[in-house]
Image (cartoon, rainbow, N blue to C red; front, side, top):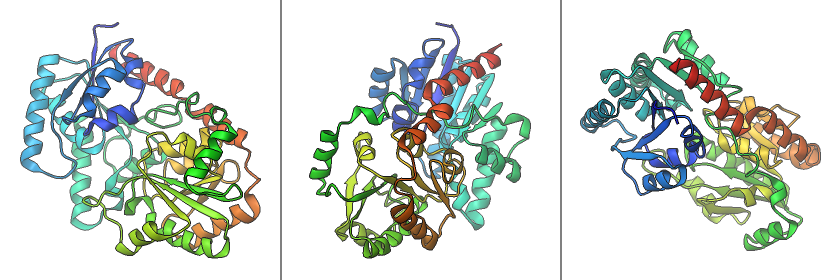
Amino acid sequence: MSNKKIIRVTTVASSLKILLKGQLSYMNQFYEVIGVSSKDPQLPEVTELEGIRTKGIDMTRKITPFKDLRAVWQLYIYFRKEKPAIVHTHTPKAGTLGLLAALLARVPNRLHTIAGLPLMEATGKKRILLNTVEKITYACATKVYPNSKGLDTFVKQEKFTKPSKLKVIGEGSSNGVNIKHFDPSLFSDNDKNRLKESLHIDNDEIVLIFLGRIVNDKGIHELVDAFVNISKKYKNVTLIVGGTPEKELDPIRPETENILNTHPKIKLAGWIEDVRPYLAISDAMVFPSYREGFPNVVMQAGSMGVPVIASDINGSNEIIISGENGVIVPVKNTELLEKAISEFIERDFNRYSPEKCRQMIIDRYDQRLIWQLLHEEYESLLR
């Protein structure tokens, strides 16, 4: 192990545990890696799963000036104590607070990965404020890594930082996908039939799936409205919705929530710990999100051999190539989303080869490749 310390910072522990799963233990072979996030029961789990030290420093996802200043001070004290060679932040709030503290603590390499920008959907004074915060974050960084080519273009267009600070690792993604874990061959016909039975889905049903937070920004309204019409035209179509709402941050309309809870062809699965069996019984994923960095669920679906009907946003439109492993539709367009689903049912159901869908992910987003490229980036910076 190198005597170089790398501190990875996220706002909440679940990001260390899920979004960076496996990457922290991989990097810990070469460096001393420390994970920092808000205090949370999941933080000790990160220590156990990844074999790294962790530190809890509370950060909020909202704008809370006094709590934010306290977090910057605590991060500053911790960085001064640990003297890392690299501080690498993820998620917007952790980026701002972590990089400001790292700058004050004179950490030589201050890195930030951009994985989606909430400001893309903001307007007016809120957009101006978020733009300013983003510029401050990147000003504190020595290197910024958009996790998609679309995000890279957006940051350049908005002039948030100088282009020389920006770099996309490989073909994009913060952590790639574990292709050995997300493998359809791991699930037998009996496994799939048992899950369908538990969800009361007939064997002749066409199964669509959505995985993600049940919030406006994920295109839930368009998805539900399109599916209501689809279910009137086709009686053998089921929609599985896997995810949980965020009523404080981004509540959906009451009428949409009512349809989700009462529609006979919509199966609300809630939070799914292991999405693979659900993808294994699905014929297509529908993912009409308004904004993403680089959506993991789209890569996971592809690795499971499932084509994806996705909105034309950065990340999704890089993973999905229309006509090859799915189809791209305009964002926030219920009519064209419904048309794409109808065409999949009527014309394209057997068009997409599961083997090709999977191979397109393996070639570009195999997790081990992403880790190796990031390791090479760290090495070049430390040299």
